[in-house]
Amino acid sequence: MNPFLLAAAAVTTAAVGAGAPSPASPGASAAAPVPSTVTVGSAPATPPGVSPPAVAPRGSARVLGLAEAENFAELHQPSLTVARATTDVSRARADQTLAPLLPQVNAQASYQRQTENFAARSSTLPSSVNSQSSKANFDTVGVYNFGLGASELVYDFGQTYGVHHAASVNAEATKQSEFTTLLGVLFNVRSAYLQAWAQKALVAVDQVTLTNDQRHLEQVEGFVNAGSRPEIDLAQSRADLANAELALVNARGAYDSARAQLVQAMGLDAMFDFEVADEAVGPVDGEDLPADRLMPSALAARPEILALGKQLQAQELTVRADKGGYGPSLSVSANASENGADITSLTWNVSAGATLQWQLFQGGLTRAVVRGAVANESLIRAELVQERQQVQLDVVQALLGVRGAKVAITTAQEVETNTKEQLRLAEGRYRAGAGSIIELQDAQVADSSAAAQVVQAEYSLYVARASLKKALGRR
Image 1 (cartoon, helix red, strand yellow):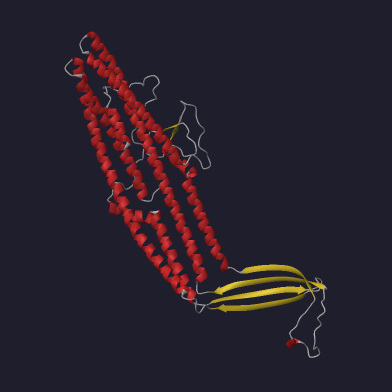
Image 2 (tube, rainbow, N blue to C red):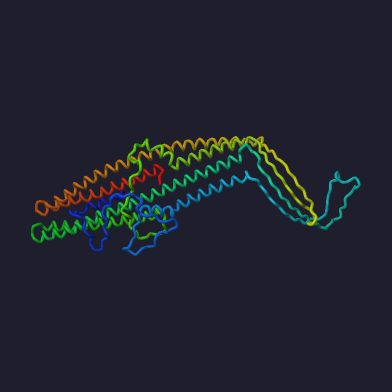
């Protein structure tokens, strides 16, 4: 269930008094006013390499800004570590495919001990030899062999180069996917931060409710003791105070839960004592423009689009490389060696050659590989079209969310102004003896609900702005 609906329901059970917020009762946590909008970035970001702060003593919690929370996520979020490692793996694979295009040089040295027995075929015996001794000879001789060889692929109709080029482009696509992960992590952190911010604001609303109910209880006790009000008003006021205390406990619990979720979104291993700052997401550049004006920049910046574009380019290169399998390949080689039974008197040899190899028939293997590569190319093209449509939907929905939330804020603020005036009048009527405790309670509930609605509307606007930044491919 929406936490704001739960909070609003809790607030409606308490009777709220009029007047400015007063200090919290002993033992209650400090109440912060509902924050006003400020531009993100006022909190300094933690320099790279700085670890999260140690647990601070209770009551001395540090204030965590949104920019700092985002920086912690970039440093510690495991999903980003995985994405960066995946990019490194793709680059390493691209480097591996480059190896066959470079000269291959190898050196070898060997020593072998063998018997001197020699068996020759009769057709190869010298004319002066017409028999072979069958006597076993166990004399042995050592043979040394040293060699150095080099080979180079000259041309294979683009097969090897195409594989390398495709792997390099795929590595670029993986880098774009890493940026996609980063945008998702930042959005999750912003959402979790704003959730904590809103819950903190609701704690402030409930704190005001509790403070006013404590003041009202004192007033009602005076009226009842003076005999100007029935005792049922005192029972009602005490019930309202108890409900307000329960609502505040629930709001603080929701705030603690939201902070724990924020710690998880930042990728930290342990909870530390902090309060979220009274800041929110400021206006996004272009949020008042029509969707068609923002769409070109969104399509050009969204990493999902760029990644699929790179994948499509890599697949086109793969298709061309696979078609190269229909043609021959040419390579050259050179070798130098020294060998003999006496290491001080070795015989040297050099050789060079060229090899032309052509797989004339492989049972249809090349044709099947090419057909599969072409099908994968068509698949990526379709995915690219789908992703472009998704980007358009993301931008439109985010813009509608921003504009709807702006209207909702204006309406909620107007409602809050009227409910405060209604509460002021109800309090005056109660003091004058013209109003009932029920009338005061209804006005109190309406005022509390209106305050919660303002928080909900502001939260919706800030989350919509965070969604718009993500939809536009911006950090």
